[in-house]
Image (cartoon, rainbow, N blue to C red; front, side, top):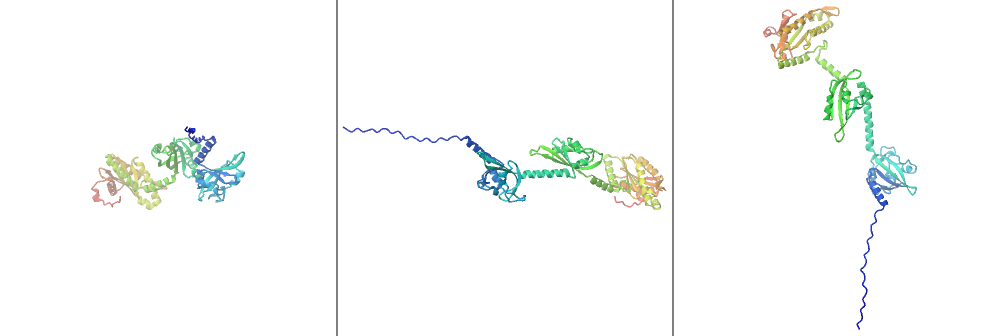
Amino acid sequence: MPKKKSVSPKTSPPSRERAPSVEPATEGQEVLHQAAQILSAAANGIVAVSTDGVITLANPAAADLLNRDVASMAGVSTDRAFVYGNGHAQAGCPLPLKQQFENGPYYEDQEVHMARSDGESFEAVYSVAPYEENGSVSGYVITFRDITARRRAESALRLAAVVFEHSPEGLVIADARRRVTKINPAFQRLAAVKSQNIVGQELADVLMGGADTSGDVLDKLDHKDHALWEQWCKNKRGKRYAARISIAVVRDDAGVVQQYVAMVADITQQKLDEEKITYQANYDQLTNLPNRTLFMDRLTRRVLEGKRSKTSVGLMFVDLDGFKAINDTLGHDAGDQLLVNASRRLEKCIREADTVARLGGDEFTVIMPLIDSFEAAAVVAERIIQSLAEPFDLGGREGRISASIGISLLPAQASTASELLHNADVAMYHAKRLGKANYQFYKPELEASIKVAARDL
């Protein structure tokens, strides 16, 4: 019989090993992960230190502040990592951290000059705090940050405050609504005001107080950042002063107005000096009448106005007869007094629109705009002759003079200011030839009989 094959039992396929399942992160691991992210993102430097003063952990901000690598900071002693920088008496020496670890103070900010690894210094503030494990201190945390920018800003603010308080020029600060928020002592003295009475008022009212300048000048600041002008003001005591006002607009990054800063300089003496110089250049120092320079300027303007409006302009040339005799017999002081008194009489004889000027010596002129006719000019001339014929009291002594007057009219007898003056001069010499104490109108035929020296006009 054939041998029966034995049938071996079927072998089951090898079982696969199941991959170990990934356990979800524990709560503790999640906290550690978040803590690491916080340390990495923190702007302040954070350093963990063992109880013996060796760094065990540092975040990127700490490494950047000290100019070190994060990895290389572990194992470094705080005596090497944290040292005083330039600006401190102990530059290069370790900060007293180890003593602070043992004795505190903890959680209190300390400001120091701190050095980086490259030797550069920065202003820093740091604090130390212990941390515990199982109820005992296992290390310390140093938190620090760079406050250089803040210290510079504080220094700038202190400087600005000193400048504001002690500036010789008045300073006025207003908010975006142009309400005054602060004034300095110089402005208080200049405007004779007190700070508590000014704060809250409109900037225009404060700056334009007693001035003849319109507050509309401030409206121009809506479209620009600066304005400058000069004006005469009157302070609270009624005293006039000249001011140069400069206003700057302070805007934020978006261009929105935040403040207005006005600087008010007292330029009273400067203006008075300028006015004095101008006066001396244009007025006769003895009689205070316009001199030749101002006379020619006014005559030229009157002639131009007369041509535009097609109106007449009259000119009188007045010479005082007998003045030289008084000057020679009674002295120069008496002569000066006579010139002054004669000037006042001439001013009383003319109209408000007319101008009396002294050309020099005993020669005077009268500009008569809008003169109606030869007859009207003759009336003024008669008045002048009669007034000057009255005796003068020259310090208890009597002085007598007369006046020879030449008259020329535009456009009837001249077309320019120079012609008008020349013609009046010719007519005046003709009046003298006729016996003085009279007036004569210009006539062309007078040129042939009278030679008049050319005058530099």
